[in-house]
Length: 520
Image 1 (cartoon, rainbow, N blue to C red):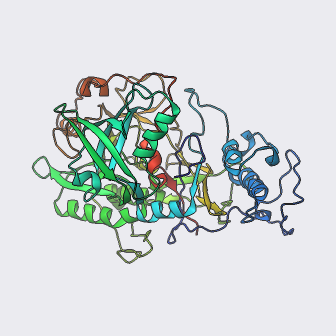
Image 2: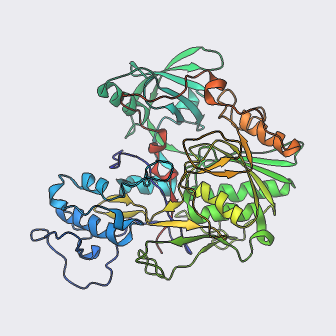
Protein backbone atom coordinates (compact mmCIF):
# COMPACT_ATOMS: atom_id res chain seq x y z
CA UNK A 1 0.00 0.00 0.00
CA UNK A 2 1.44 3.37 -0.97
CA UNK A 3 0.29 6.06 1.43
CA UNK A 4 1.97 9.34 0.63
CA UNK A 5 1.34 10.94 3.99
CA UNK A 6 3.51 10.46 7.03
CA UNK A 7 0.33 10.11 9.05
CA UNK A 8 -1.16 7.25 7.05
CA UNK A 9 -4.73 8.11 8.01
CA UNK A 10 -7.49 10.05 6.32
CA UNK A 11 -10.58 11.89 7.33
CA UNK A 12 -13.80 12.26 5.53
CA UNK A 13 -16.67 13.87 3.88
CA UNK A 14 -20.32 14.41 3.99
CA UNK A 15 -23.05 13.95 1.51
CA UNK A 16 -26.08 15.86 0.49
CA UNK A 17 -28.32 13.38 -1.30
CA UNK A 18 -25.94 10.62 -2.15
CA UNK A 19 -27.48 8.05 -4.43
CA UNK A 20 -24.17 7.63 -6.21
CA UNK A 21 -21.02 6.19 -4.76
CA UNK A 22 -17.67 7.73 -5.12
CA UNK A 23 -16.22 7.20 -8.57
CA UNK A 24 -12.69 7.90 -9.65
CA UNK A 25 -13.73 11.00 -11.55
CA UNK A 26 -11.39 13.82 -12.43
CA UNK A 27 -9.85 15.98 -9.78
CA UNK A 28 -10.72 19.48 -8.74
CA UNK A 29 -13.15 22.05 -10.00
CA UNK A 30 -12.46 24.35 -12.89
CA UNK A 31 -13.62 27.36 -10.87
CA UNK A 32 -15.05 28.99 -13.98
CA UNK A 33 -11.92 29.37 -16.13
CA UNK A 34 -12.06 28.53 -19.86
CA UNK A 35 -8.38 28.93 -20.70
CA UNK A 36 -6.71 25.98 -22.47
CA UNK A 37 -4.82 23.49 -20.36
CA UNK A 38 -1.07 23.86 -19.99
CA UNK A 39 0.98 21.08 -21.54
CA UNK A 40 3.46 21.03 -18.68
CA UNK A 41 6.43 22.33 -20.67
CA UNK A 42 5.66 26.01 -20.12
CA UNK A 43 4.16 25.97 -16.62
CA UNK A 44 5.46 28.83 -14.55
CA UNK A 45 5.06 29.48 -10.83
CA UNK A 46 4.35 32.83 -9.25
CA UNK A 47 3.90 32.82 -5.50
CA UNK A 48 0.29 33.50 -4.53
CA UNK A 49 -1.01 33.30 -8.12
CA UNK A 50 -3.09 30.21 -8.96
CA UNK A 51 -4.53 28.92 -12.21
CA UNK A 52 -7.77 26.92 -11.95
CA UNK A 53 -7.10 23.30 -11.03
CA UNK A 54 -9.11 22.20 -14.06
CA UNK A 55 -6.27 23.46 -16.25
CA UNK A 56 -4.07 20.63 -14.97
CA UNK A 57 -6.52 17.84 -14.12
CA UNK A 58 -5.66 14.35 -15.43
CA UNK A 59 -2.47 15.55 -17.14
CA UNK A 60 -0.10 13.05 -15.73
CA UNK A 61 3.35 14.54 -16.15
CA UNK A 62 4.76 15.09 -12.66
CA UNK A 63 4.85 18.89 -12.90
CA UNK A 64 1.26 19.06 -14.14
CA UNK A 65 0.15 16.82 -11.29
CA UNK A 66 1.89 19.03 -8.74
CA UNK A 67 0.33 22.16 -10.20
CA UNK A 68 -3.08 20.47 -10.10
CA UNK A 69 -2.55 19.62 -6.42
CA UNK A 70 -1.42 23.18 -5.68
CA UNK A 71 -4.46 24.79 -7.30
CA UNK A 72 -6.93 22.18 -6.03
CA UNK A 73 -5.66 22.65 -2.48
CA UNK A 74 -5.93 26.42 -2.76
CA UNK A 75 -9.53 26.06 -3.98
CA UNK A 76 -10.84 23.45 -1.58
CA UNK A 77 -8.53 22.88 1.43
CA UNK A 78 -10.23 24.01 4.61
CA UNK A 79 -7.14 25.92 5.78
CA UNK A 80 -5.94 26.95 2.32
CA UNK A 81 -4.53 30.24 3.65
CA UNK A 82 -2.22 28.34 6.03
CA UNK A 83 -0.42 26.41 3.26
CA UNK A 84 3.07 27.72 2.48
CA UNK A 85 3.06 28.30 -1.28
CA UNK A 86 6.16 26.57 -2.67
CA UNK A 87 7.38 26.23 -6.25
CA UNK A 88 6.24 22.73 -7.35
CA UNK A 89 9.30 22.31 -9.55
CA UNK A 90 11.61 22.37 -6.53
CA UNK A 91 10.08 19.29 -4.86
CA UNK A 92 11.28 16.01 -6.42
CA UNK A 93 8.11 13.88 -6.42
CA UNK A 94 4.36 14.36 -6.54
CA UNK A 95 3.83 12.57 -3.23
CA UNK A 96 6.44 14.70 -1.48
CA UNK A 97 4.83 17.85 -2.83
CA UNK A 98 1.35 16.74 -1.74
CA UNK A 99 2.68 16.16 1.78
CA UNK A 100 3.56 19.87 1.95
CA UNK A 101 0.08 21.08 0.96
CA UNK A 102 -1.37 21.27 4.46
CA UNK A 103 -1.36 23.47 7.52
CA UNK A 104 1.52 23.15 9.96
CA UNK A 105 -0.39 24.76 12.84
CA UNK A 106 -1.34 22.96 16.06
CA UNK A 107 -4.46 22.75 18.21
CA UNK A 108 -4.84 24.28 21.68
CA UNK A 109 -3.69 20.99 23.18
CA UNK A 110 -0.51 20.97 21.10
CA UNK A 111 -1.59 18.31 18.61
CA UNK A 112 -1.12 18.75 14.86
CA UNK A 113 -4.13 20.53 13.38
CA UNK A 114 -4.11 18.24 10.32
CA UNK A 115 -3.18 14.64 11.06
CA UNK A 116 -5.17 13.21 8.16
CA UNK A 117 -3.49 14.30 4.91
CA UNK A 118 -2.98 11.22 2.75
CA UNK A 119 -3.49 9.35 -0.52
CA UNK A 120 -3.96 5.88 -1.99
CA UNK A 121 -3.90 4.29 -5.43
CA UNK A 122 -7.40 4.81 -6.79
CA UNK A 123 -8.07 1.12 -7.43
CA UNK A 124 -7.20 0.29 -3.84
CA UNK A 125 -9.39 3.08 -2.51
CA UNK A 126 -12.38 1.87 -4.53
CA UNK A 127 -11.94 -1.67 -3.23
CA UNK A 128 -11.82 -0.46 0.37
CA UNK A 129 -14.65 2.07 0.30
CA UNK A 130 -17.14 0.15 -1.83
CA UNK A 131 -16.46 -3.47 -0.89
CA UNK A 132 -14.60 -3.41 2.41
CA UNK A 133 -11.76 -5.33 0.75
CA UNK A 134 -8.18 -5.10 2.04
CA UNK A 135 -5.08 -7.29 1.95
CA UNK A 136 -4.19 -9.18 5.09
CA UNK A 137 -4.68 -12.23 7.28
CA UNK A 138 -8.02 -11.46 8.89
CA UNK A 139 -6.90 -9.98 12.20
CA UNK A 140 -6.98 -6.40 13.43
CA UNK A 141 -4.04 -5.21 15.51
CA UNK A 142 -4.25 -2.65 18.30
CA UNK A 143 -0.92 -0.92 18.81
CA UNK A 144 -0.64 0.06 22.45
CA UNK A 145 2.86 1.36 21.79
CA UNK A 146 4.28 1.71 18.28
CA UNK A 147 7.89 2.27 19.40
CA UNK A 148 10.14 0.09 21.54
CA UNK A 149 9.25 -1.41 23.90
CA UNK A 150 6.31 -2.06 21.58
CA UNK A 151 3.01 -3.63 22.50
CA UNK A 152 0.57 -4.92 19.92
CA UNK A 153 -2.38 -7.23 20.45
CA UNK A 154 -5.09 -8.71 18.23
CA UNK A 155 -8.28 -6.74 18.83
CA UNK A 156 -10.54 -9.05 16.79
CA UNK A 157 -10.49 -11.43 13.84
CA UNK A 158 -12.70 -11.81 10.80
CA UNK A 159 -14.42 -15.20 10.28
CA UNK A 160 -13.24 -17.62 7.59
CA UNK A 161 -9.82 -16.00 7.24
CA UNK A 162 -6.27 -17.29 7.73
CA UNK A 163 -6.22 -15.86 11.27
CA UNK A 164 -9.52 -17.35 12.43
CA UNK A 165 -8.73 -20.66 10.72
CA UNK A 166 -5.61 -20.84 12.92
CA UNK A 167 -7.75 -20.11 15.99
CA UNK A 168 -6.14 -16.74 16.58
CA UNK A 169 -8.40 -14.45 18.58
CA UNK A 170 -8.65 -11.24 20.54
CA UNK A 171 -5.99 -11.14 23.23
CA UNK A 172 -3.08 -12.64 21.30
CA UNK A 173 -0.02 -10.42 21.77
CA UNK A 174 2.63 -10.12 19.02
CA UNK A 175 6.14 -11.21 20.01
CA UNK A 176 7.87 -11.76 16.66
CA UNK A 177 7.25 -11.18 12.95
CA UNK A 178 9.38 -13.20 10.52
CA UNK A 179 11.98 -13.71 13.23
CA UNK A 180 12.21 -10.02 14.18
CA UNK A 181 11.61 -9.12 17.82
CA UNK A 182 8.40 -7.05 17.68
CA UNK A 183 8.90 -5.59 21.15
CA UNK A 184 12.52 -4.45 20.94
CA UNK A 185 13.45 -4.09 17.24
CA UNK A 186 15.59 -0.97 16.95
CA UNK A 187 16.71 -0.55 13.34
CA UNK A 188 14.69 0.76 10.42
CA UNK A 189 15.35 -2.44 8.49
CA UNK A 190 13.85 -4.51 11.32
CA UNK A 191 10.83 -2.24 11.59
CA UNK A 192 10.35 -2.40 7.82
CA UNK A 193 10.14 -6.19 8.19
CA UNK A 194 7.55 -5.80 10.97
CA UNK A 195 5.39 -3.45 8.89
CA UNK A 196 5.69 -5.57 5.74
CA UNK A 197 4.59 -8.63 7.67
CA UNK A 198 1.77 -7.02 9.61
CA UNK A 199 0.36 -4.98 6.73
CA UNK A 200 0.97 -6.81 3.42
CA UNK A 201 0.37 -4.89 0.21
CA UNK A 202 -0.61 -7.93 -1.87
CA UNK A 203 -1.99 -11.42 -1.64
CA UNK A 204 0.20 -14.48 -1.29
CA UNK A 205 2.70 -13.04 1.21
CA UNK A 206 3.71 -15.72 3.72
CA UNK A 207 4.57 -14.39 7.19
CA UNK A 208 5.54 -16.25 10.35
CA UNK A 209 4.30 -14.79 13.64
CA UNK A 210 5.02 -15.64 17.26
CA UNK A 211 2.05 -14.78 19.51
CA UNK A 212 1.44 -14.99 23.24
CA UNK A 213 -2.04 -15.51 24.67
CA UNK A 214 -2.29 -12.82 27.38
CA UNK A 215 -4.70 -14.98 29.40
CA UNK A 216 -2.50 -18.09 29.56
CA UNK A 217 1.00 -16.82 28.63
CA UNK A 218 1.21 -19.69 26.15
CA UNK A 219 3.11 -18.89 22.96
CA UNK A 220 2.21 -20.04 19.45
CA UNK A 221 4.10 -19.79 16.19
CA UNK A 222 1.89 -19.63 13.11
CA UNK A 223 2.55 -18.98 9.44
CA UNK A 224 -0.17 -17.06 7.60
CA UNK A 225 -0.55 -16.26 3.91
CA UNK A 226 -2.14 -12.93 3.01
CA UNK A 227 -5.30 -12.81 0.93
CA UNK A 228 -8.01 -10.33 0.07
CA UNK A 229 -10.08 -9.84 3.21
CA UNK A 230 -13.69 -8.72 3.10
CA UNK A 231 -14.44 -7.34 6.52
CA UNK A 232 -17.79 -7.74 8.25
CA UNK A 233 -18.83 -4.21 9.23
CA UNK A 234 -21.63 -5.31 11.60
CA UNK A 235 -21.32 -8.35 13.89
CA UNK A 236 -22.37 -9.74 17.27
CA UNK A 237 -25.98 -8.57 17.08
CA UNK A 238 -27.63 -9.78 20.29
CA UNK A 239 -29.78 -8.90 23.27
CA UNK A 240 -28.55 -8.74 26.87
CA UNK A 241 -29.99 -8.16 30.33
CA UNK A 242 -32.98 -10.48 29.90
CA UNK A 243 -33.57 -9.20 26.38
CA UNK A 244 -34.09 -5.53 27.22
CA UNK A 245 -30.71 -4.29 25.95
CA UNK A 246 -29.57 -4.52 22.35
CA UNK A 247 -25.90 -4.77 21.43
CA UNK A 248 -23.89 -4.97 18.24
CA UNK A 249 -20.35 -4.38 17.05
CA UNK A 250 -20.13 -1.76 14.29
CA UNK A 251 -16.69 -1.69 12.65
CA UNK A 252 -16.97 0.50 9.55
CA UNK A 253 -19.32 2.87 7.72
CA UNK A 254 -18.40 1.34 4.36
CA UNK A 255 -20.83 0.72 1.52
CA UNK A 256 -21.55 -2.89 2.45
CA UNK A 257 -22.54 -1.93 6.02
CA UNK A 258 -25.90 -0.44 5.04
CA UNK A 259 -27.88 -3.68 4.75
CA UNK A 260 -26.40 -5.34 7.90
CA UNK A 261 -27.24 -2.19 9.86
CA UNK A 262 -30.79 -2.27 8.50
CA UNK A 263 -31.08 -5.92 9.55
CA UNK A 264 -29.56 -5.32 12.99
CA UNK A 265 -32.01 -2.57 13.87
CA UNK A 266 -34.93 -4.56 12.51
CA UNK A 267 -33.94 -7.53 14.68
CA UNK A 268 -33.52 -5.40 17.79
CA UNK A 269 -36.80 -3.61 17.14
CA UNK A 270 -38.56 -6.99 16.90
CA UNK A 271 -37.00 -7.88 20.27
CA UNK A 272 -38.53 -4.74 21.85
CA UNK A 273 -35.25 -3.57 23.36
CA UNK A 274 -35.48 -0.52 25.60
CA UNK A 275 -31.77 0.34 25.56
CA UNK A 276 -28.98 0.03 23.02
CA UNK A 277 -25.20 -0.40 23.28
CA UNK A 278 -23.24 0.06 20.05
CA UNK A 279 -19.61 -1.05 20.09
CA UNK A 280 -17.76 1.44 17.87
CA UNK A 281 -14.40 1.14 19.62
CA UNK A 282 -12.62 0.27 16.34
CA UNK A 283 -14.86 2.13 13.89
CA UNK A 284 -12.78 4.76 12.11
CA UNK A 285 -15.62 6.11 10.00
CA UNK A 286 -16.78 6.09 6.40
CA UNK A 287 -19.90 7.52 4.78
CA UNK A 288 -21.32 10.42 6.76
CA UNK A 289 -24.84 9.85 5.53
CA UNK A 290 -24.61 6.29 6.85
CA UNK A 291 -23.80 7.81 10.25
CA UNK A 292 -26.97 9.88 9.93
CA UNK A 293 -28.90 6.67 9.12
CA UNK A 294 -27.56 5.01 12.28
CA UNK A 295 -28.47 8.06 14.35
CA UNK A 296 -31.99 8.05 12.90
CA UNK A 297 -32.43 4.32 13.56
CA UNK A 298 -31.43 4.93 17.18
CA UNK A 299 -33.63 7.96 17.82
CA UNK A 300 -36.51 7.76 15.32
CA UNK A 301 -38.56 10.52 13.71
CA UNK A 302 -40.03 11.93 16.92
CA UNK A 303 -36.56 12.84 18.19
CA UNK A 304 -35.01 13.92 14.89
CA UNK A 305 -37.75 15.35 12.67
CA UNK A 306 -36.67 18.66 11.15
CA UNK A 307 -33.29 18.57 12.90
CA UNK A 308 -29.91 18.81 11.22
CA UNK A 309 -27.56 15.89 11.60
CA UNK A 310 -24.55 17.77 10.27
CA UNK A 311 -24.13 20.92 8.25
CA UNK A 312 -21.06 21.25 6.10
CA UNK A 313 -18.78 24.28 6.32
CA UNK A 314 -16.11 24.78 3.64
CA UNK A 315 -13.36 27.37 3.61
CA UNK A 316 -14.31 31.06 3.58
CA UNK A 317 -14.09 31.24 -0.22
CA UNK A 318 -17.23 29.07 -0.44
CA UNK A 319 -19.94 30.24 1.98
CA UNK A 320 -22.87 29.31 -0.26
CA UNK A 321 -21.90 26.70 -2.85
CA UNK A 322 -20.04 23.42 -2.55
CA UNK A 323 -16.66 23.95 -4.28
CA UNK A 324 -16.46 20.30 -5.36
CA UNK A 325 -19.97 19.65 -6.68
CA UNK A 326 -21.03 23.22 -7.43
CA UNK A 327 -24.33 22.64 -5.61
CA UNK A 328 -25.83 25.01 -3.09
CA UNK A 329 -24.80 24.00 0.41
CA UNK A 330 -27.50 22.08 2.24
CA UNK A 331 -27.17 20.30 5.60
CA UNK A 332 -27.23 16.53 6.02
CA UNK A 333 -30.48 15.72 7.81
CA UNK A 334 -31.17 12.58 9.82
CA UNK A 335 -31.61 10.03 7.02
CA UNK A 336 -34.74 7.89 7.36
CA UNK A 337 -34.47 5.77 4.21
CA UNK A 338 -32.18 3.23 2.58
CA UNK A 339 -29.71 5.10 0.37
CA UNK A 340 -28.05 2.32 -1.63
CA UNK A 341 -24.35 2.98 -1.18
CA UNK A 342 -23.20 -0.28 -2.78
CA UNK A 343 -23.03 -0.78 -6.54
CA UNK A 344 -25.80 -3.38 -6.28
CA UNK A 345 -27.82 -2.37 -3.21
CA UNK A 346 -29.62 -5.15 -1.35
CA UNK A 347 -32.76 -3.03 -0.96
CA UNK A 348 -34.48 -0.49 -3.15
CA UNK A 349 -33.18 3.02 -2.40
CA UNK A 350 -35.91 4.89 -0.58
CA UNK A 351 -36.97 1.90 1.55
CA UNK A 352 -37.96 3.28 4.99
CA UNK A 353 -35.51 2.52 7.79
CA UNK A 354 -36.55 0.95 11.09
CA UNK A 355 -36.01 2.89 14.31
CA UNK A 356 -35.89 2.14 18.02
CA UNK A 357 -37.16 5.60 19.06
CA UNK A 358 -34.70 5.84 21.94
CA UNK A 359 -33.85 8.96 23.91
CA UNK A 360 -30.45 7.60 24.94
CA UNK A 361 -27.73 5.33 23.61
CA UNK A 362 -24.56 3.81 25.05
CA UNK A 363 -21.47 3.96 22.82
CA UNK A 364 -18.26 2.00 23.50
CA UNK A 365 -15.26 3.98 22.25
CA UNK A 366 -11.46 4.12 22.03
CA UNK A 367 -8.92 6.35 20.29
CA UNK A 368 -9.71 4.31 17.15
CA UNK A 369 -13.27 5.69 17.14
CA UNK A 370 -13.05 8.39 14.49
CA UNK A 371 -14.76 10.65 12.02
CA UNK A 372 -18.21 9.38 10.99
CA UNK A 373 -18.43 7.50 14.31
CA UNK A 374 -17.80 10.74 16.19
CA UNK A 375 -20.40 12.37 13.93
CA UNK A 376 -23.01 9.95 15.34
CA UNK A 377 -22.17 11.22 18.82
CA UNK A 378 -22.20 14.88 17.83
CA UNK A 379 -25.33 14.61 15.70
CA UNK A 380 -27.35 12.88 18.43
CA UNK A 381 -26.16 15.35 21.08
CA UNK A 382 -27.32 18.16 18.81
CA UNK A 383 -30.78 16.56 18.71
CA UNK A 384 -30.94 16.26 22.54
CA UNK A 385 -30.54 12.49 22.50
CA UNK A 386 -28.53 11.38 25.55
CA UNK A 387 -25.18 9.89 24.56
CA UNK A 388 -23.43 7.86 27.26
CA UNK A 389 -19.79 7.14 26.41
CA UNK A 390 -18.02 4.14 27.88
CA UNK A 391 -14.32 3.58 27.16
CA UNK A 392 -11.60 6.05 26.24
CA UNK A 393 -11.40 9.29 24.30
CA UNK A 394 -12.10 9.29 20.57
CA UNK A 395 -9.58 10.35 17.92
CA UNK A 396 -10.90 13.86 17.24
CA UNK A 397 -11.84 14.16 13.56
CA UNK A 398 -14.64 16.70 12.98
CA UNK A 399 -13.46 17.27 9.42
CA UNK A 400 -14.16 15.69 6.06
CA UNK A 401 -13.26 15.51 2.39
CA UNK A 402 -14.24 14.37 -1.04
CA UNK A 403 -11.84 11.63 -2.01
CA UNK A 404 -10.54 12.98 -5.34
CA UNK A 405 -8.78 11.07 -8.11
CA UNK A 406 -6.11 12.49 -10.36
CA UNK A 407 -3.91 10.28 -12.53
CA UNK A 408 -4.93 7.06 -10.75
CA UNK A 409 -4.14 8.39 -7.27
CA UNK A 410 -6.94 9.32 -4.87
CA UNK A 411 -6.17 12.23 -2.55
CA UNK A 412 -7.64 12.91 0.88
CA UNK A 413 -7.31 16.55 1.85
CA UNK A 414 -9.45 18.23 4.51
CA UNK A 415 -12.13 20.27 2.78
CA UNK A 416 -14.82 20.92 5.35
CA UNK A 417 -15.78 20.76 8.96
CA UNK A 418 -19.18 19.79 10.35
CA UNK A 419 -21.55 21.19 12.96
CA UNK A 420 -24.64 19.66 14.53
CA UNK A 421 -28.14 21.04 15.02
CA UNK A 422 -26.81 23.24 17.85
CA UNK A 423 -23.99 24.65 15.69
CA UNK A 424 -21.36 22.67 17.58
CA UNK A 425 -18.42 20.92 15.94
CA UNK A 426 -15.33 21.77 17.96
CA UNK A 427 -14.03 18.35 18.98
CA UNK A 428 -10.57 18.23 17.39
CA UNK A 429 -9.33 16.56 20.60
CA UNK A 430 -12.19 14.06 20.54
CA UNK A 431 -14.95 13.14 22.98
CA UNK A 432 -14.08 11.53 26.32
CA UNK A 433 -16.08 10.17 29.29
CA UNK A 434 -16.45 12.81 31.97
CA UNK A 435 -14.27 11.03 34.56
CA UNK A 436 -11.31 10.68 32.16
CA UNK A 437 -8.00 11.78 33.70
CA UNK A 438 -6.06 12.91 30.66
CA UNK A 439 -4.37 16.27 30.81
CA UNK A 440 -2.56 15.89 27.49
CA UNK A 441 -5.65 16.68 25.40
CA UNK A 442 -8.71 18.90 25.64
CA UNK A 443 -11.57 16.57 24.71
CA UNK A 444 -15.28 17.34 24.93
CA UNK A 445 -16.50 15.65 28.11
CA UNK A 446 -19.49 13.32 27.77
CA UNK A 447 -21.56 11.52 30.40
CA UNK A 448 -20.15 8.05 31.01
CA UNK A 449 -17.18 6.08 32.32
CA UNK A 450 -13.49 5.88 31.44
CA UNK A 451 -12.73 2.17 31.00
CA UNK A 452 -9.73 0.49 29.38
CA UNK A 453 -10.09 -1.82 26.40
CA UNK A 454 -10.21 -5.29 27.92
CA UNK A 455 -8.35 -7.79 25.73
CA UNK A 456 -8.85 -10.63 28.20
CA UNK A 457 -12.45 -11.09 27.00
CA UNK A 458 -14.00 -11.36 23.55
CA UNK A 459 -16.08 -8.52 22.14
CA UNK A 460 -19.74 -8.93 23.06
CA UNK A 461 -18.96 -10.85 26.26
CA UNK A 462 -21.05 -9.24 29.05
CA UNK A 463 -18.00 -9.62 31.33
CA UNK A 464 -15.73 -7.65 28.97
CA UNK A 465 -14.84 -4.51 30.94
CA UNK A 466 -16.35 -1.85 28.68
CA UNK A 467 -19.58 -3.72 27.98
CA UNK A 468 -19.88 -4.67 31.65
CA UNK A 469 -19.44 -1.03 32.66
CA UNK A 470 -22.18 0.04 30.24
CA UNK A 471 -24.60 -2.54 31.63
CA UNK A 472 -23.79 -1.53 35.22
CA UNK A 473 -24.11 2.19 34.46
CA UNK A 474 -27.53 1.53 32.99
CA UNK A 475 -28.56 -0.18 36.23
CA UNK A 476 -27.02 2.03 38.90
CA UNK A 477 -25.50 5.07 37.22
CA UNK A 478 -22.05 4.43 38.69
CA UNK A 479 -18.65 3.86 37.07
CA UNK A 480 -15.95 1.35 37.98
CA UNK A 481 -12.61 2.61 39.26
CA UNK A 482 -10.66 4.23 36.44
CA UNK A 483 -8.62 1.60 34.64
CA UNK A 484 -5.78 1.55 32.16
CA UNK A 485 -4.44 -0.90 29.64
CA UNK A 486 -1.29 -1.26 31.75
CA UNK A 487 -3.20 -2.27 34.87
CA UNK A 488 -5.51 -4.65 33.01
CA UNK A 489 -3.17 -6.50 30.75
CA UNK A 490 0.16 -6.21 32.50
CA UNK A 491 1.61 -4.25 29.58
CA UNK A 492 4.22 -1.61 30.23
CA UNK A 493 2.87 1.91 29.73
CA UNK A 494 3.51 3.41 26.32
CA UNK A 495 6.51 5.72 26.38
CA UNK A 496 8.57 7.96 24.16
CA UNK A 497 11.34 6.32 22.19
CA UNK A 498 13.91 7.15 19.55
CA UNK A 499 13.36 3.82 17.80
CA UNK A 500 11.41 3.61 14.52
CA UNK A 501 7.66 3.14 14.84
CA UNK A 502 5.47 0.37 13.55
CA UNK A 503 2.63 1.89 11.55
CA UNK A 504 -0.76 2.01 13.20
CA UNK A 505 -3.13 -0.75 12.11
CA UNK A 506 -5.58 1.98 11.11
CA UNK A 507 -3.43 2.53 8.03
CA UNK A 508 -4.45 -0.91 6.83
CA UNK A 509 -7.72 0.48 5.53
CA UNK A 510 -8.20 4.09 4.53
CA UNK A 511 -11.88 3.39 4.01
CA UNK A 512 -12.22 2.72 7.72
CA UNK A 513 -10.77 6.08 8.75
CA UNK A 514 -12.98 8.54 6.97
CA UNK A 515 -16.01 10.75 6.97
CA UNK A 516 -16.80 10.45 3.29
CA UNK A 517 -18.93 12.61 1.06
CA UNK A 518 -19.43 11.05 -2.39
CA UNK A 519 -19.90 13.25 -5.42
CA UNK A 520 -23.31 13.73 -6.96
